[in-house]
Image (cartoon, rainbow, N blue to C red; front, side):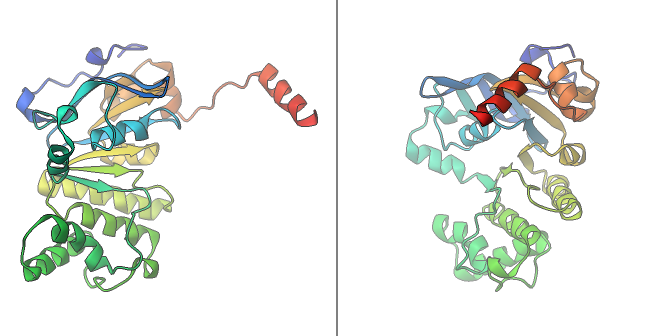
Amino acid sequence: MTESPRQEDVGVSPSPEESDYILVVEDLVVHYGDRKVLDNINLKIRRGETFVILGGSGGGKSTLLRNLVGLMRPSSGRILFDGEDFTAMNDAERIEIRKKMGMCFQGSALFNSMSLEDNVALPLREHTRLEPSTIDIMTKIKLELVGLGGYEEFLPSAISGGMKKRAGLARAMAMDPQIIFYDEPSAGLDPIVAAGIDMLIRRMQSTFNMTSVVVTHEMASVDLIADNVCMLKLGKVEAIGTPKELRACDNEFVRQFFERRPEEEDIDDQQAFIESLTE
C-alpha cells in the first residue's frame, strides 16, 4: 500500500469472481443538504467474510451503514445486493430485499415490554406465515445459538448489557439472513464481555458462512473478527485490506489510527480557545 491510495489499488488479495460478492458499492455519493458526507465510495464485500468499516467520529461510518441497509437513498452511485441494484428499487422492492438482511443495533433496540422470546419472534410473526409452533421452535434455537437458552421469558430490563447484545443478534438472525450488519456491537461493554461478542460474531461466520458488516472504532475487535477492513476519513475511503495489510501500509492516517496516536495540537488553536473562555 501507499499513502492516499486509490481505492482500486489498496489490498493485495486476489479478486474473486463477481458472483462471489454479496454487496458491491459503486461510486456512492451522499449529501446532507449542501454538505457531501460520502465521496465516491467503492467497496466489494465477499460472501461469508467479516468486513469491518473503521474510522474516527464523523468519518461517515453510520451514514454508509444507513445506505447499505436501505434506510437512505444516495445522491448518486449504486449499491448492488446479490447482483441487484438496491438503490434503484421502489420502497416495496427494498422491503423484500431487507428481509434478507439482519441488523444489530448499537443499543440492541429491544422492546422493553416484550420478553426476549417475543423480541426474537417478532420478525417471523410480521414477515412470514409460519405456524406459531414453528416460530416458537425457531426462536428457541436462535436464543440457544447466542447462549441465551433458558432466558426466553426474561424482559430486557432483567438482563445485562452483554446479554442484550446477544438477544439483538438472535433477533437479527431470526429470518436466516444472508448478511448481518452490526453497529458498534461491543460499545459500552467491558473488555471480557466485548471479546465474547466478537467471538460470537466470528462463530456465526464459521458455522453458517454468515456475511457480516461491522461498523466500529474498537481496534481490539478489528483484530479478532475482521477479514477485511475499510478505513474511512471524512467521507472518503483511505484504505481497504486485511488488518495485517493496513498495519503495514504507509498511509499516515491509517498508521495513526492503528497506533492510537493523537492529532498534533495546534498551539494557536489552544490559545484561541482559552481566550474565548475568558471573553
